[in-house]
Image (tube, rainbow, N blue to C red; front, side, top):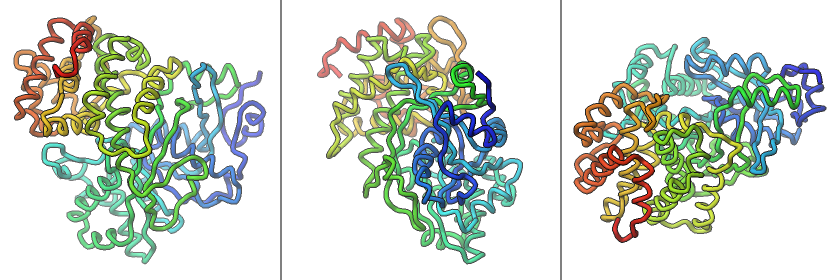
Length: 498
């Protein structure tokens, strides 16, 4: 079997082996700029858009992918060399692989290399939507102050160097300023990140920045830009070298960075697009008036569940999420965390079978073909925990409800942050706050409570005596007995003991 490098020239040969775009990519207009062209975007929004574009009457919604950060060089170069094409590999529960080439990304820009090009593209009249996957930490929100963090050195840079920005806020401000100055229409800014009220967060953080960087622009943004909330869901593990080799050996496709994902996908979007939108609902997305119940459920169960499995699994020496959830003791712990601590505070979920949703999560987590790496799930935990786990804790604390399992997970994270698992192996910790977290974790060995003093993560949680007591006891138990013996003990307890 002859091998073919994935690019536009070889697409006709590749089409004999896997599904490829049937539409004429050269005729597409770029209606969407997407910032953050990692695996999730390519398994989710870009996939939905590719499916939509199979209807050749749809020509206005090609995507320009923007690599925002210096370490995005590899993905930018890969897309550039492959003409924006990549292979999506869906790993089905039965072990089979469904493969298709995605073609919706028709332009690609590397922001550190060409900031003005990115600003001009965002300001282009044909661009109607700017979408974001910049991770939870990318919104520059300080959990302790509940405000935009102007002390961030990158934000300070953007304020003094507006034409060579480094953050999304600098780019959006300059692009929207150009639209206003040129008398152009506004656009929609749509977050696709795992933050409850992600549209509200994007708007609030941007307007806070703009009020300092370009105060005359605030009123224009208020009336010309919309920020719909959305809930996104598709487990997308990091692509491994084995995935690349398997694709080449089974199909002859040489793809430097294919994307691997699970079969499940969900996209629930608030229908608030000021200058039009793609008909994503025709390919499986759901437009609603209120996203909040869906996103709260997903963040508190799926995303929090991932963090629970990741942190406990890392300490136990596991490499992948399926290994962790297929440990019956860890699985039982997660199940009781979802039932006892999360479900009671989710509120009205009309039309949703919560029991069925939780069962499906355990099935998805346990997909042995996905092999979602635990170090990926644990990365940037300092940004994830305040969004995925602490809202449940705070809601339960106001009702004097159960918080033992959440406190246990936080204690496990403090111990994880020491940098070794229970077998003495070094953990690969990736976190923007790694230095501070490591420092606090070391001090916490003698005084566990000091870990809760990281206010940008925990806010005022250190002042709640009931949580501190549960957390401190959990910390000591894990140190003395190890994770597995502790979760077995917790699982044996009756709910009325929590």
